[in-house]
Image (cartoon, rainbow, N blue to C red; front, side):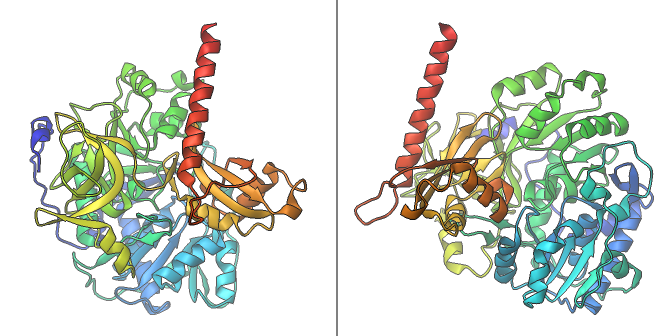
Length: 566
């Protein structure tokens, strides 16, 4: 393990972190006792106090136990946008000694079902606008109990902020066996039994594509979850008096830890936006003196591209942070001219958010940062596991207290995700990187086949599998294409069935994809070709298509430069 990075360690912090060895729910109990009347959340100008969040989480836990039959270690699906109900449900599930299974609200019925079956979960807490997607699963008995929440229930004060229609929509009175409205679950007034889940019991299982294309649930304990939620607050010396903005989605570990669990542990007030809106975000920064938030670079770019941004008082902003994609150097420089540093970090669902963060006083641009508390990260030869010298490119492997136990019910995939080095169990990230002479890590490329579109990880094999359901598609191969805004976007090469040639166009395929898969997975570009390149064994050579695309992009870029200099 190299110690080069220690000389750049934050001056205020020790190199070791003693995270509490408690159930994550206990963080809410402590904050509710410390700051009972202080707003935990501000939701379109409606404040919701720590004590209120704690009380309602307890009541949700009581309903889960006594009416839904949830027992210790059961998995409960959580399927909604950022909202007060997400936070309350998350902690209610933990209070019931159960395991949170957060799902992407962009998932459609079949994607939800696949995760529900994999997690062996029969109880779900969902938002009203998503209920129609999972209602068929009640009919087929794949789900047994569902609690349905209307976001508008927590709009209790007038606001002049622009509220999205799906947030303002009034509660729909649903009545069918197995379905309970959120308000009725709270009104039942049921109390849960003892809190018995300990630090080494499972806490949350976020889904990731891991090292192959099929989504897998990452098993995180209360201990692994506690480490990163405390670490992010400690790294940046976040004081409880600072107000934060939550725009990163809570179902993903970045938003879950940096914008929900960390601030709740620390006692910060969080201004909550379920849907990104740069105008509302700017208004909230000014109105609530927001000091920081975590977001992917595309959100930060969009925020400052607001033509009216100079009308707002943004002087309260102390830092912006995030990851998932590199912040373009030109944008980072423009932020610095405003006195704002964007701190990049690096982590995975398998590590419950960050394993690397840039030091607050010594950040490098377009850099993953340095390993944080207790983390041993190395760059190794992917074939041999031998550590490489500074500057050499290899696979990033990580050992630390936040690394997951493995993938739920997938022992073979779990075994393949780890490598032993010097007697330690290291996670193979599948990312290619290098370390500089100072011990800072930099991303170079991906060993695994993945597309990163605005921070959303898209697996080509999953998209291809769905596209094969289209009657016109004979073969499909999905790659990543450069996109000025998203970083990468999804492109599909399609071979049409003979009877469909001339009968359909690329936009029609794109429209079909929008109806059958989550929006972030939809190919933005579809190109018809006569045949896909294949190996002698018949395997589609996706790398050949990817290389062809990169060459075409380089040629277009060179032509544009020649034209610009003419």
